[in-house]
Length: 169
Ligand code: FES
Image (cartoon, rainbow, N blue to C red; front, side):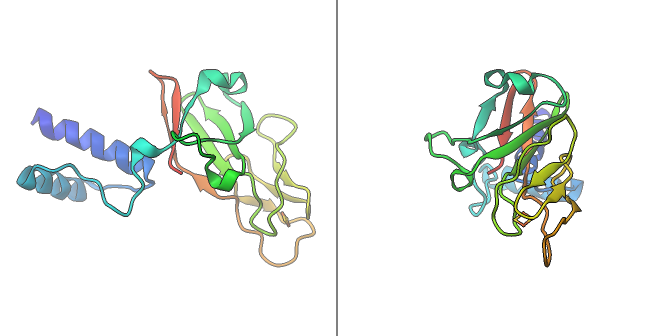
């Protein structure tokens, strides 16, 4: 029973990192499958969580309090920049919750700029589009023609014990 609970927690945590929601029945079937063949669950097409970049929040004083937001190039464990070398926007929206967004506007590829005050809008200087900093969704398309997609959002998991943020990218 304890083993299944441990596996359940591991699966939920892994799925959250991968941006997947697991219902109870799916969890049960995965756990049952594990019990049958003795192997851990790691879908081959998914990036492995252990390869995700892990940020030490203590390295970024701006993120030490709720409302802090930075734009930073993030490197994986092999010191290779992720997100094609483009910075990520990291916003501490709650004590234990962060929002991670691509800093590249998907309308025409300009780099957005951070809001001037906590919780303000992210701004794209190319066509004056504005995005909600809470989730990267479009607030105002400004002078842009055609569709302006939301900023790409990446799932992340904060570990309050280690004070680290793991980003699923
Ligand atoms: S490139 Fe951002 S609104 Fe056009």
